[in-house]
Image 1: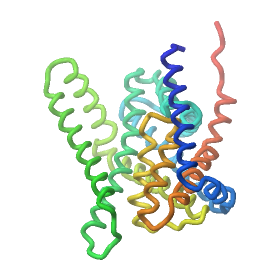
Image 2: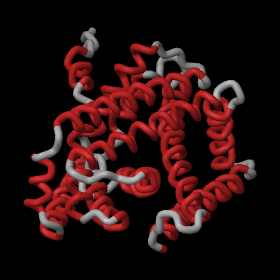
Image 3: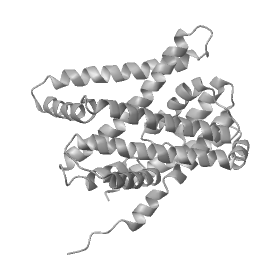
Image 4: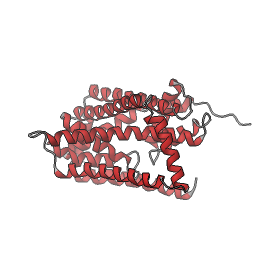
Length: 309
């Protein structure tokens, strides 16, 4: 492995540890630990079940997306591969190496490019659903007089993110009109996205699967909060929790550790809870996510190794 790659991985590890240490010192770390250690195991088990459910639905979404790009993936293989990618994403710096491996192993039916597109589009569909739920919830809260009050900075954050997505879409559309290299690449990816995600025969199932994975992710976090002593109202589950989970996409730590806890500590006071309770809920969620991907360890151990020639 190239030295530069090792340096980046080491930096992500250091960032993760530094964030967690800073948060531990900024909040009441021992109190947060007590909340985690005293969490109700029944609720934690329910969170693990919800997270396993979202992994299964994600595997179905990947299978559906890949089919639109000429790949035939059996249900059992899709689930096994998704668990394997999850355990690698959770255990290695970067958070996408498992997905990259999933694309490489699925390249034989339609080539590496289409296999990579299937993985990218599947993950993108999930993130768009997560942000869509957040945006819809913020809009409903905003138009309802006397509803849940949200700080202006939360509204600005959601609006800024939505605006950034819109601008990015416009920029990509403008570039796609070019007949040169980048324009051709963007048109090819756009056509692939339309075929695998937006096609009339596919879109309804994409929406259902993406909303299902989003709902189970949000539910799992809310259950972890309940296990550590905080009951989240529905508005918080639909607005605050997605913002917390979206921080995991920032590629500067290992699987979002530290970033997620920092976001939870910052956002929980919005709903009348404490930063310590937010940290504890997020930390419990991270631990339960690790537990939920343990089937990936089994897949990794029994995965047949290629025989040497």
